Amino acid sequence: MTIWVNGQERQLSNSATVADAVEATGAARDGRGIAVALDGEVVPRDRWQQTALADGQHVEVVQAVQGG
Amino acid sequence: MSWRIAGRELESRLILGTGGFRTHDALAAALEACGAEIATVAMRRIDANASGSLLDVLVDAGVTVLPNTAGCFTARDAITTAQLARAALGTDWVKLEVIGDDKTLLPDAVELVAAAEQLVADGFVVLPYTNDDPIVARRLEDVGCAAVMPLGSPIGSGMGILNSYNLRLIREQASVPVILDAGIGTASDAALAMEAGADGVLLASAVSRAADPARMARAMRLAVEAGRTAFEAGRIPRRLYADASSPMEGVPELS
Image 1 (cartoon, each protein chain N blue to C red):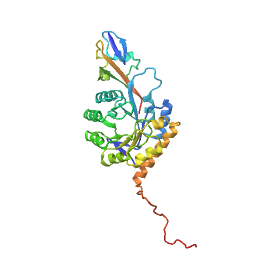
Image 2: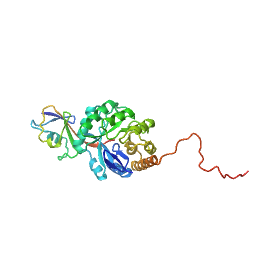
Image 3: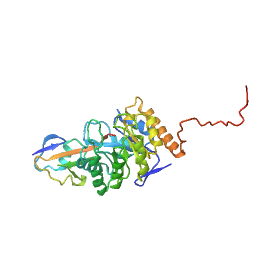
Image 4: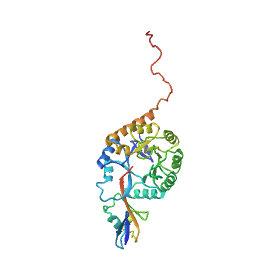
C-alpha cells in the first residue's frame, strides 16, 4: 500500500504499522526524541507497533531541531 | 536573585533560542558563555542524514529543553505540534507561537489565545510568544499561561524594543513572569528590557548570527544581569535640567 511518510510516497506492506513508517525514515529504532502524527493525530511511542496503517494515510515523523 | 516560571526555580534570566548557530560546537560554547538554563528547539521532519544529536548537546550543557511551535499558522497546528513535542521530548512545557504573517512573523493573537486556552486545559505549561499588546497579554494570562512573552520587534530583526511603553504596561499588570522575546539586536537592548522590569529575555539570532557568538553570549549574560540589577536598585528620575551633585555651599571666591 501507499503511505505518505514526511511528504514522500512510500510503498509499505499491507500489514505495515506506524513503527514500519518510522523505520522507513531511517530513524533510530529506540525512537528517542522522535514523535509521530498519523493523519494529524499524535500516536504515542508505545502504540507504534500496534497501530496499523491504511492505504493513503499520511505519517509525519518529527524530532527536535535548532530553533528560536 | 532567583525567579520562577510555573514553580520552576531559575537563576539565569536569559533563555537562549538554539536557532541559527552554524555548528553544535558554536551552540555549546554560547550556552556555556550565556549561562542559560533553558534553551528552545523547534520540531521538524526527521533528517536521518543530520550529523550529531542536538539533544545530546543540550543534555551535556545541562539545560532544560523548551520546544516551540514555530512555523504554525493555526491554533490547530500549534496544538498538534505541542503534543508532538511532548511525545518526543517528555516535557509539557511549550513556547507557543502562532504566526499570522510570513513576512513579519507577527503573532496571530486570535489563534494564539485559542491555542493557549486548549493547551492549558490539556496540562501544558504554556509560554506564549505574543504581540506587545497589554490586552492580549492579559487575555493570555487569563486563560492560564505561565508567563507572557511579548516581542520587542519582529523575530530576527535586531530592532530592539520598539514600544517600551507597552512593555511597561504589560509588566505593570501581569502577575506571571514577563519575558521579552524577539527583536534583541545587541546587549543594550537586553539591558533595556530588564531595566523596564522584564523578568527575563529570550533571544537567539542576536547571539547565533553575531560575528562571534560565544562573545556575544557573554555580553548578553552581563547585559541581562546589569539591567536586572539596575531595575532592582531603582534608577534616578529623569530631569529636564541639571541637579548638581557637588555642594554649592562653601564654594571659594576666587576672583
